[in-house]
Every structure is written in C-alpha cells, then in structure tokens.
Image (cartoon, rainbow, N blue to C red):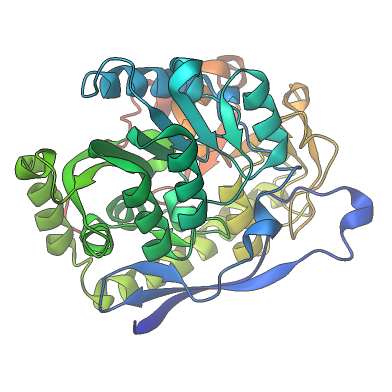
Length: 413
C-alpha cells in the first residue's frame, strides 16, 4: 500500500468525546491527515486512533434520537426482508442502541456492539449482543453458537475499522453461502461534491468509494451486486454484497457499473482530484471565519445547532471556540453540561435555543430538513442559519421557502 497525504486537518480530539470541565487538561488529540492509496484507491487516514479510545461504555451518539434515522432503518429492514428467506438469521455489526435491530425478531437476530452501554440495552431488549470488537475470532464464535447468517448488516461501522481485510474476511466467514452482506457508509463521491470535509474524523478511518470497496471486498471472496445512493448522513452508499461463488453474484445490478463509471469520471481513482479538494477545504475555512467574525462585529448571538462529530472537525480545523460560537445546543442528555472536544464550547439543552439567539451554525447539517421544520419560529422572527455545505452560506426564511435540497444528482466537479 502506497499512501499519499492530500489533506491535513491538524490536531483533532476524539470527535464524539464531549467532556466535563475537569477532563480538559488530559484530552487526547492526534494529527488528522488523510491519504490516497494508489493501489486500492482507498481514501484513508495516515494515523488510526485505537478503537478503545472511541468506542466504550460512555459512547454518546444514539441513532434512535433522530426521527430521520428511525424512519430510515424501518424502511431499510422492510426492504432487506424482501430479499431474505422466512425467519432469516440476521447479524448487525455496530448495533448502537438497537435502532435497526428493533425491526427484527429477537429469536434469530444477533448483534455486535463494543460500546457496553448500548450492548446492555440491546441484550435487555432480547437481542443476543456481543460486546466485542469485530474480527475473525468473533465471527468464528458466532458461527459456532448460532450458525451462519442470512444477512449481515452494518450502518456507519465498516468505515470505522482500519483493517479491512480482517473486517471483510470476518464477514465472509459468518455469511451463509447465499447470504447478503449489506452495509451503509458515507460516500466519497458525495464528500467531494459537497466539500463536506467534516465527514472526516477519528471514527471514520476511511471514506469509501465503490471503486475501493470493490477492490477490498474481492480480496476476501465477496462481490458487490448492487449499490444504493442514499441521502442519510450527508450522502451515503448502501452496498449489497455476496460471496463471489454464490448464485446472487451471478446477477450484478447495473448500479454497480454506473457508480464506478461515475466515480472514475469524478477522478476518484486519481490523487489530482483530492489535491483540488484540499484547496477547496482551505477556502471553506476562510469563508466560514469571515462570516462568524462579521456576526461578532454586529453583536449577534451565534450558537451551534447539534453537538456532532462533524462539527468537532470543523471547529478544531477552523480554530473556532466560544469567542465566535457562544454555545452548542443538543437533545442528547449525555452531552448536555459538557464541553465540545478540543475547543471546549459548552453544550446545553435544546431549550437554550431561544429568542436570544440570532444565528445558528448547522452543526447537524445532514438533518437540515428536520431542523428547518422544527425551528420555523426561529426563522419567522428573523433568525438565520449558517451552513458550510457545499459552500459557506447564510440561510434565512425566504431562502428556505425556495430551498432546493442537495439531491444525489450527479455533476462533474
């Protein structure tokens, strides 16, 4: 593997590591550099953070806190069930608080979740959950106890694991001969098109292209048979894969070749496009700082909406602290009363998003539809949002009336 660095986002903390005031002095950080592997076309970090530092008993992100994600996983489960036998054996890797598991029968559904707080919850719900990190040894234990799986599902998890050969090899081991491996992760094409560099943080060891995934999966005897382009999490791909020797692998959906062709058109198999991306990221930083300083000069109260991992990357890269953003509001109780990683902006309840706020930075920009609908009163009284995706922009009520959501429509850079 030959990795060429194209982006340096500076020293970054654990993105989801919201901390109490007394924990700030010993906060962990690492140099977040992003590279392109010219052999596999994989976009990956130069330095991986130890899994134990990110995924543990205090992990805060809950998928079920978002109505968007609850609805998404309900629809996903219904879709997948149509391609499975009756009473399928289902395994989810990275099950979080059970937002996907809840749609399946407890008798034949199993889970892997290294964050013990969530593993305890899903075990209590009746789903046998292994609170361990995913690898070949665990896959062997699961097969020995429950047999091979008809469906292995993972959402925003595969991109977390540095060793893809071990990861995908473990999936091949636990998958039945005609089973389906379906996983969702952020799309590299969407990240490049949207300039959404905040998709990159400690947990996202890789940002996947279909090109790279095809190369990585084929190394362990798995083939991509279909690709769905999704809007969730700022643009994701749902990859459908099966054993290369299976009947399923004889029927490759046209979406596979369409995605690969499009990615090559974008240049995702060449370092040059990533060098251009790096320049656009630097410009985005300058533009965002310009807007925030202008708000400060006008004595406007600016907060951030959503204590997200994405905003951690933005604030630390752009060196934004409570001098420019007074506080962050979030519905996650575990984050309230703490401080954002690295720059230590205080986090409060969403009740603090009140009439004193003039400007809100969209830290959770990937849920903007939900946010705009929820905060109609804020917009009606003249409040504005700031977004940095796909470019830095101030959004007011009038613009939202005519707001055209950024679709998955494909356009050349």
